[in-house]
Image (tube, rainbow, N blue to C red; front, side, top):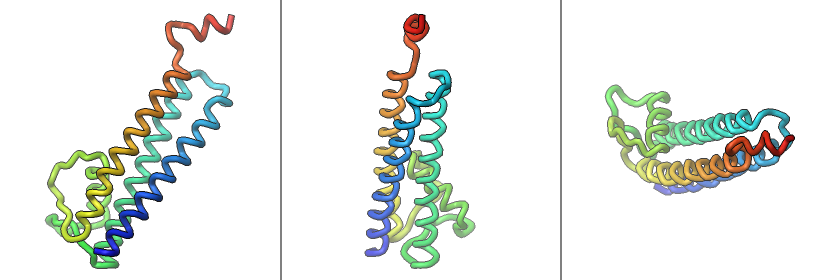
Length: 149
C-alpha cells in the first residue's frame, strides 16, 4: 500500500507540473503566432488534448508497473489484464467515465481514485484555459476586423 500511495502522489505532482508547463508554453507561444485566431484556438484544443493523453498514459503505465513489477494491486478482468487494458482503464478513470467493465483490486484502487480526482481537476483547468484563450483570440462580432481598419 505504501508503494501505491507514493506512486499516487508522484503521479499527481508529475501530471500537474506537465499540465502547467504545457499551458505556460501555450501562453508564451500563442500571442507571437502569425496565424488566424481560429488556428490559435485549434492549437489550444489539440495541445491540451495531447497533454491529457500523455497524463493518462503515465497513469496507465504506472498502474501496469505497480501490478506486474511491484505486485501492488491488479485489474480484475477476463482475460487477465494486459498493458492495453491498463491504458484503457486509465482513460476510463481519468475522464471519470467509469464503465465498470474493469475494476481495480488492492492498493491499485487508491491510484484509481487519485487519478479520477486529478483528471477532473486537470480537465477543468484545460476548460478554463480554453475559455480564456477564446475570450482573448476569438473575434467577437467582427471586432477584430474593424480594429484592423
